[in-house]
Image (cartoon, rainbow, N blue to C red; front, side):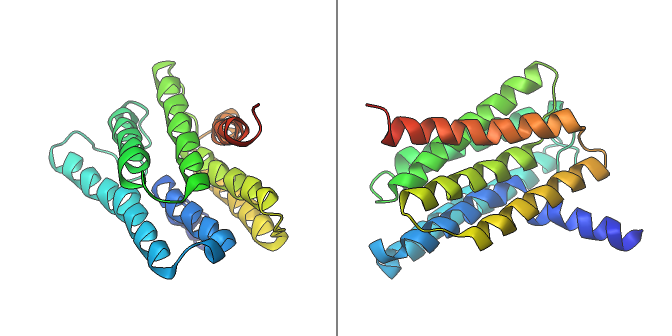
Length: 208
């Protein structure tokens, strides 16, 4: 039982929402590395690492020290999610409109747009007294982005895609197993992650 608990819990930590932009940029360069110089890849990855991972962790511990947060890094309390989500939305906007403004990572910028609206939906759901799964939403957004990117570049990556779907299933199972969410909260998290990515991809490439 303990080994099962540790196995499932590991997915909640390894695939925490703040890791998803790093996973997305890694998958992006996996498919598009021929179009970028190595230095461009390193710099862009570093920018995403600092803005979406290191900065949020620093701000989390700052909020903990100010006693504005009492939860663990999972932030299970719906009320305590408001400030971190607002901060993360601001970080994503700064990343897209300022840090990556002159980069050639156009498709990744679309992913950031979709992610912003995913978090906006999650924020609105809190005011509606709902607590949908941020883990599932963030991971689904990343998987949707990778799928759309694979189609755009005609590069089938069934092994990676199947692995990502498996990870999504285990992460969702972890959230259910530890009673962090119920099934409807998982489903809405999935929809909140997928639909903004599809919408912005359609607007960018298919809307006439």
